[in-house]
Image (cartoon, rainbow over all chains, first blue to last red; front, side, top):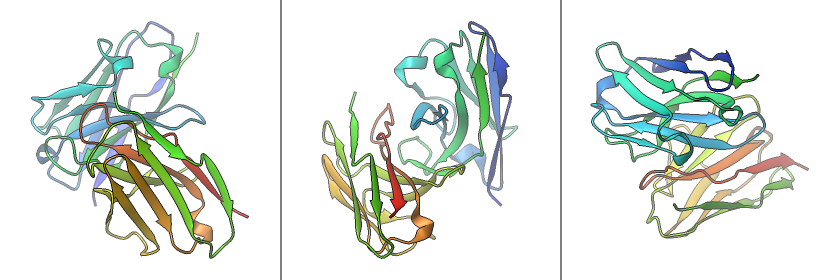
Length: 121
Length: 107
């Protein structure tokens, strides 16, 4: 079945880095754009980043531009989010999500369970 | 950036009631509007895309309408399993912004 499994979350000090991974299975990963979406404790959903099916186009929410980098390895069916210069405001559950299309502007139809990132001094 | 505003932020209704949630975009987004349902402790689920296209497996009591800046999600007959927070999202361009959410409870 179609599955997205995130990993790499944890507790980290402000200013440090973390890399999240999202392992995809059950579908042709290289045909779909992918996203990262986060949800702070008790808060709503926030879209974080998008990467097109081949990695040629990337987009970010303003609050993470210059600090976060989305990437993918289609040979490994894996999506990544490199997070640098973390702040307390980045504390959230991070979900990867599959786009309905290849370019990234067709909304999400599959979500992973998420991985928790806590930035705490 | 385009802002998405949902109303109400919460509502309480009886089983069988008709429930309507509104989402307004600060600029026109054509019909690039999705609705998600998030039950407590669960991952969000896509209910609807393209403003009114129901995702496979979603009960027929859910419907969506609108275009441009004003959109609605309607539950024709509220059921106990519909207790959740509902989010709209625009996806025509980055950032793919979500509304603030509408929490639906049973009275």
